[in-house]
Image (cartoon, rainbow over all chains, first blue to last red; front, side, top):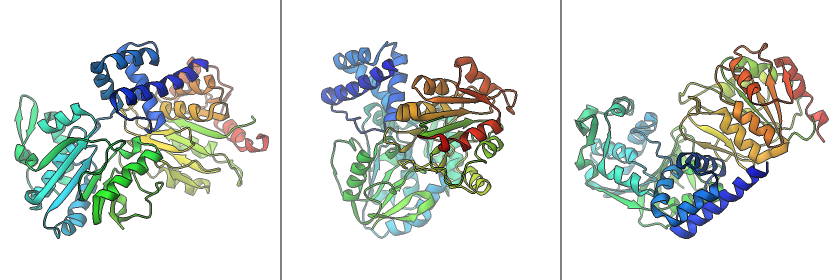
Length: 273
Length: 191
């Protein structure tokens, strides 16, 4: 039990050290998951204690970048939860159309799968040309991957099925070129996409938007940080703008529960009230 | 068994009917929160909470992110997400890779609940064809909590309880009806 107590102290110190040295703020991430990820990294790096890991991270920025890949969870797929994208298409797009120009913020875009899904949907609805998409994340490696838009061909078959259920109107293969086991996404999809480093924990709002998509990011935050992020979304969204969350996320336990109203509740689509 | 503040239960193959039994005897005013991870197919929807609630005639819900644990409520993990208990006694969901091919993983619930409740936790591991939960249960014991393993001879699939027994000596090895009686009597012995 003593060693467990030590581990908990060391984890707090490591997170504090990362914040002081690299300005990445994990202090208000959900404790259980961040602990598991740090302990997992510990084993991968062959460190005996979290203190030993801290020493390496503090003195070697390259080591921190490696650790960052463990601290962020790049789990994503295209048209994940197809019913969600179908509801976006049917319920949100007709309203989105009424704005002359549209700004969309994909917060925590990870390796870009959500970005390309959104771009494809908007193109098919004839809206992509008058939309600017801001795709933000804290992990520079993930952002690089998102910009490159190269994904394993194996996953594309699953994505094609998601796309079809999500109300896709074309052959999904039209959106990429296959080469060497990879799929290279059609680069015109990202012509209006701005990829940027942005932290929901430390940065502020950078633009007014009509739609904010932040899926499976808030679950990694504690209530305080969740409230901060929802506050940024609320501030960024225009009057009656849309907020879309992950399939198990809600505003119910947050300070913003009465500032967003559900539009399609089961698909986690909300409107600024 | 005194001072139990929360109960966590893990099960896999054969788990639904096992849960019916072990939770079937709880008295009406039972006020300890119970959190369950049952291995589920990775579909988007599960009717487990609904089915349990109808059968047990007690409040049962699918665990939601940031939901505070309430006395007497039963929470079950939904498919596709790990379920943890945070130190402020709220629940959290996450999508780290599966553990022992399973998400939700019993180990993750057990580790996190042990960190939150320490000696106030009771962990129960039931039937299953998988080693998930064995390490987590030992961790509960190590953190000062109490543990129960279903008697492998009584389990529909013995692998999961056997894996737990190979790692640590639990406080009790019981049949399903023995576990039912112990849980039902928890509160009358609470201090």
